[in-house]
Amino acid sequence: MDATFHPLKSLFEQLGLPADGGAIDQFIEVHAPLDPSIVLAEASFWEPSQKNFLRDEILKDADWAEVIDLLNAQLREPR
Image (cartoon, rainbow, N blue to C red; front, side):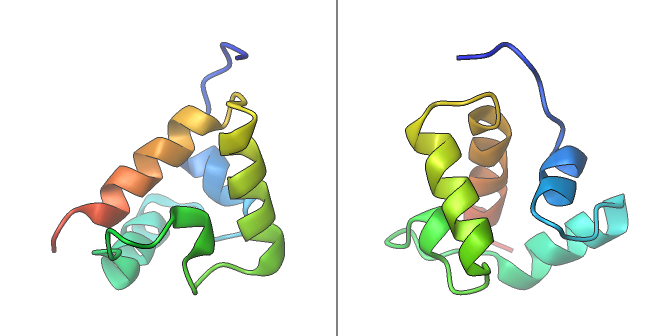
């Protein structure tokens, strides 16, 4: 695994989503809590290219995996 650290803002940019702090907070607020039975990459709110990116990066344990795990955890927290 690459040691590169990507902040949440960079992940949102990579996914083509608004990446300022307020937009990230709003995204999490709207989509959380994500049902525990749903794999993050299979959530209905992703576009196909976003699903593919999330799935591939986790499967490869790529340098994006850590921040994807962070987003996953934040989307699982009860609101």
